[in-house]
Structures are given as C-alpha cells and as structure tokens.
Length: 70
Image 1 (tube, rainbow, N blue to C red):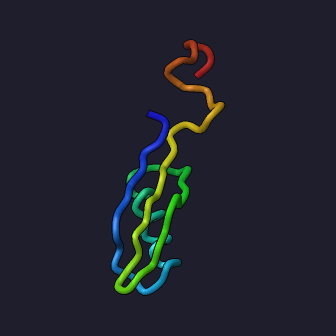
Image 2 (image 1 turned 30 degrees about the vertical axis):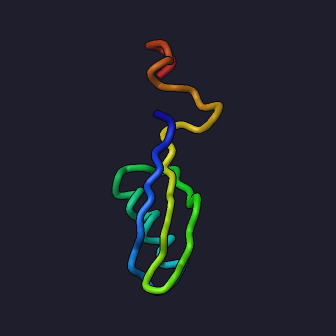
C-alpha cells in the first residue's frame, strides 16, 4: 500500500477549518506526508478527501531493501 484516502464530511465554519480537521485526523493516524485531494465547503460544513502517503513514487520500499540498506 502506497497511500490511503479518507473522504468524510466535517461540520465546520470554513474550508480552512475543514482542511485543518482532515490533516489533523491523518496525523492522528500516524501519517506524516499528507495532502488534501478535494475540499468543498457548503452550508454546515466541508466535504473533504485527504490522502496520507506511506510511499511516494520513486521512494525506496523499506521491505525491499537488503538487511544492510535499512
């Protein structure tokens, strides 16, 4: 698995607050490398799709590395 997407709706006052909530949620999951893929504030809150990366394209997979390369 290279990345995980989470799509949800946050009750919030602004798009920026929704962004902060989504990134904070992924941080609580232990993901450090995160992006907002989609965000739309409408009415009572924001629909957000956030992505947390375990590996980006071109990264070296730790489980493929030899014993001396970890």
